[in-house]
Each structure stands twice: as C-alpha cells, then as structure tokens.
Length: 245
Figure 1 (tube, rainbow, N blue to C red):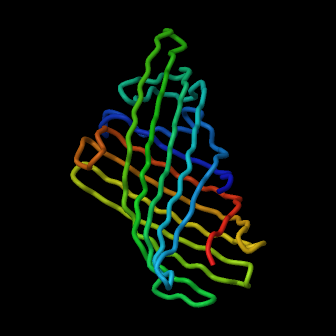
Figure 2: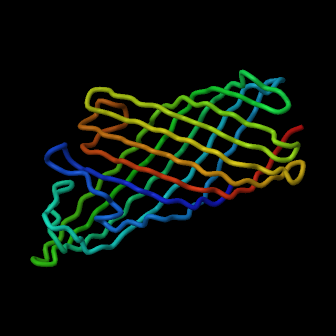
Figure 3: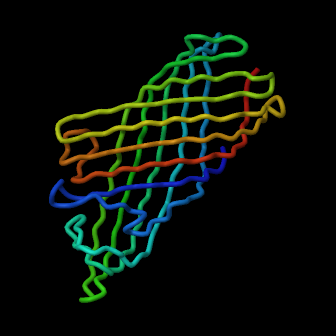
C-alpha cells in the first residue's frame, strides 16, 4: 500500500460522434491535472513451486474543476452548448480495480518471467454544470459507466542483490464489438528494497492509457453514448508486507 502522485489527462465526449465533440477536460473545463491518491495492491503465490500467482489492486482519482471557459466558438457536450466565457463546474471520478492471474514460465534465484490474463474494472463518472454568463441560463449533464476490460500481461522481476529487486509489468488489450471500442495499455517499472524479512519499501512509475467509446449497449455493462479517454502517469512510494517462508 502507498501514495500515488500522478499527472492526469482526459478527453470526454457525451453523445454521438458528430453531434458532440471531444473536450479536453483539463484545458477547457479546468480539471485538476496533478493528484495524490491512495493505492492498495497485493498478490498471492500458490502451489508448492509458487509458479502460479493471483494479483489485485485498487486506486481512485477524484477530480474537480471550476473554470471560465476561454474558447472562441461554442462547443456542445451531452446536449449542452458551452458558449465563450461560460462558467463550468466539473467532476470527473475514476476508480480502477485490477485482478489478474499469471504463470511463471521461467523462475530461478535471480529472474522470474511470467505471462497471464486479467481484467480492469473501471467505474467512471462525469458531471458538468454550465452557467452562461451572458444569459444566466444553467444547464447540467452527467454520465457514469462501469467499463470491464480484459487484458493480457507480461511480468519480469529481477533480483539485483538479495535485498534489491527490479519489478516490471506490461498489460495490453483492444476490443471492438459492434459500436463499442475499448483499449488499454498499462506499463510499470519499479525498484524494491526488502529492509527486513517481512517488510520492504518501493518506488515505481506507472503509465495507464484507457479509451472507451460506445454508441449503445453492444458490450455488457456498457450503455452510454460517448467516449472517455484517460491517460495516467504516476509514481508510487509504498510500504510492502510479505507473509510467507
């Protein structure tokens, strides 16, 4: 478990392509770019030779923004027209749950190489309030989805010394079903120091890129019109507890 220090970038479109445009949520709507959040993850190795492993993790970002829109031409999102100099109040929340299984096809005292499968489960919610500074009219729109996406993963762990370890991981997937398109890439690299037998410290850097676009309910649990693009680059300083022999 540890603290995430992240830079976020997101584009949002609510409504069908052509009727609504993708909006840079940080530049246009004033969402926070830099965030700090708490993350929990863990894994369990099982069987006698410990070649099988189950992983899980969770973290969330909660962002908001209050902005006077500096655009020259009106834009539309979710049936709302945003005119120049309108005031916007925005909330954009993302939870990322990861579960996975991997098998170590090569394992010795220095190197552990594994392949596996898993899933990202991502509740995403977006809310936008707009006040037109010329007319005083108030409008609001919101959207929330839970996007489950399977992934394939590759993991490599290297023992640099008996106490220092290099951790790397890559996950990727793309799916297109009817009017649904979803893709994800996740890469991580980090170092760990096992200061004590059951306690260690670590620092890693992770990049997650997610794109979800849908025009209906062609994919299970997805029933919305629009697109979410989310790019996360974060560093995590963490404390690790190890239970086992």
